[in-house]
Length: 322
Image 1 (tube, rainbow, N blue to C red):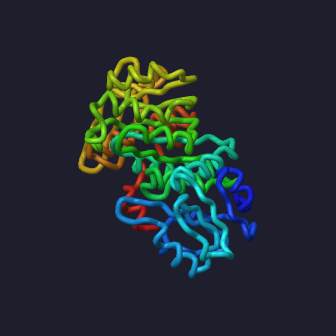
Image 2: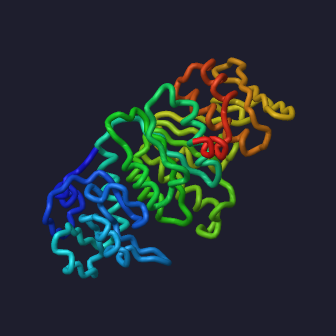
Image 3: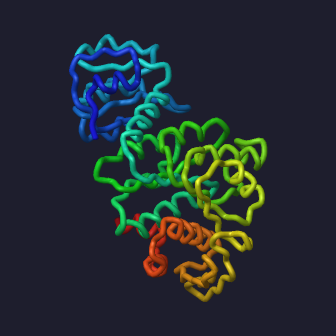
């Protein structure tokens, strides 16, 4: 999809100087990555080490004529360019992406956790790409900046969204939830990553669960009592747990490992089922269980699941091949 400069002005409700109502198709935050200058909108993001406003002249010289800037920036030297003046450039980027997301009525998976987000997202892409036209986060684009850029990729050809959300402290997940607007949630795990940004594990769990405020179904490891307690606080239409817990939807019976593979036996709807995973390390096996549970929750045929999981590739290898 694309938006006119006037449409973007209305979406952002920003003070605007519009000299040319061009069509915007690309969001730009890096002066080194300009491919389509005439249809790009540059967001002058201010970070701890660099301020995007310092690169506006360079971006302008390379043909870009549409900018989102801070209210203190003097743009009087650029008479033939469009400018949106906002209080917070990052919030404006997120606001535009959230509006864009709201234009689509397709299933959207939102993934969070301490570890395994990118692996699970990429493996789900491998497993579901024959059933859906998927839009997903590039690499590990799961930050306050990465998520809006990921969601901006959505277009009318897509039938499934698959996005990851990463946070490092409190009061961050609400922004990402409003951008992704997931209908299907996945929690990978709650480990020690980014502990410094939270008072304790409970606070971190509560913050991550903000992503799932409006999901219709949530996939999670049911062996964690604290996570189970948080799940029960959500007004979920459905929930799908996996683990050794007797109450898990997908109850894991045993893991059998050889040199290259792990066979996982489980019960699902009172039936004994199994998969073979081409990995033996614990993290990969846990992530494979999350993917297995997700596919069952999506009602994917069990034979397709077994065949797909058996052929999973490591994410590093797949990215190198691409």
